[in-house]
Amino acid sequence: MPKFCVFAFHLDRVLGLNRTLPAVSRKFRFLYDGQSCPVVSWDASLYPAGLAAGLTSLKLTWGEYQNSLKQRCWQQNISPKSDSGCSTIHHYEWSKLALFDFLLQINNRLDQGCCGFRPRQQDVCIELGYHAKCQDANHIQLENIIYRSHSPRHLVFTNNKGFFDRNEDNLDFRLLAGIKEFPEQAVSVLKTRKLREKLLQSLFLDKTYWESQGGRQGIDKLIDVIERRAKVLLTYINAHGIKVISMNV
Image 1 (cartoon, one colour):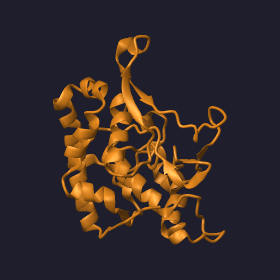
Image 2: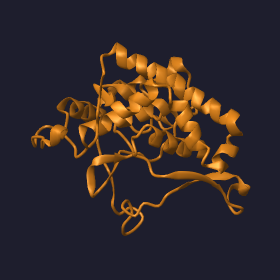
Image 3: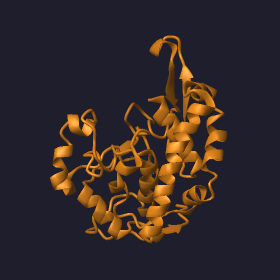
């Protein structure tokens, strides 16, 4: 698990998304036999008065989500009509989430049924029967769509369990469905090929995580995966005429 949430935090910051909670890798003698484990920063704005207070999860089906993308909800700060089907989330947030989840191949938010790729028998979507619902995908619920109660336009990316072992011929492109634009700042990092340099600089600051992944050699292997997916994403952007725009909201 440290491989996912700690790496996800650093990728999030390098891309300028700033939607994950700070996470580091640490060792405790009384936990996991002294092996490294992730420690996520406590966020009082998420939990102001107890374990779940302030943390709000959005209930949305895939069909409702796709409709909301067409409505471009809250763009230019225009309040949507009551019958538009819009949630509280700003349109641009979905573009940031899709880009982030595609690079890490996180499917437990937008594609919990694993409808966009070939799952393994041990994957949660197979074990819990979610994959069988893909024939009626419009009614599959999105999961782990989190926002702060005091900031309902912005998502918070939690539970960032990705997959580094998913090959390029089995990537989940369903995560990108309906997305017509991506954030300029994040795409520029991918285009200028500064991704590796920035990730190395950022990850090196977490010595425990760095060492737990086998040092530079192990970290390079993780970045190799993200770089290959970045190339696939840039090709997708060009092939589908996706706009790259500023998303400072």
